Length: 123
Image (cartoon, rainbow, N blue to C red; front, side, top):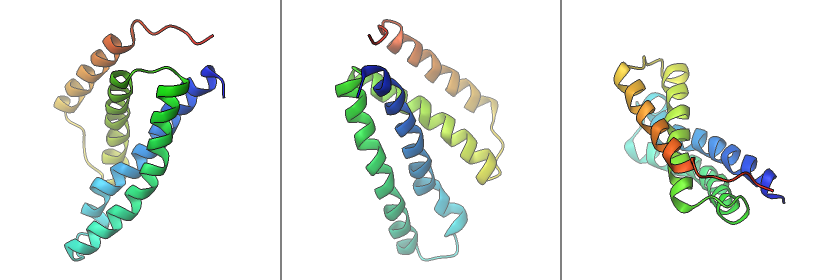
């Protein structure tokens, strides 16, 4: 795998893993609200398994092949999490996003800017 491929594959895997994790964390609030708590927990663990099957390789590829630092991977993860959560909240949970959410997201974008501003293009 080339470094260029890794630069695209790592974030792509993180996006898909975040879709699974966001559902595992919050989907039970809609889909299992009338079920016993232990059923919601087991269902969430089952979904989270698939998240880890994508997240672990994403971080390995990002760190070992793409050359992202640990801090860069973490900030990337947080930005992706906010984007996926926004879509999930609006499209699946039918929530409205507030301006505070927008402001918090802008802070994360600023964090990403500072974390990645010295990133050199892959050969």
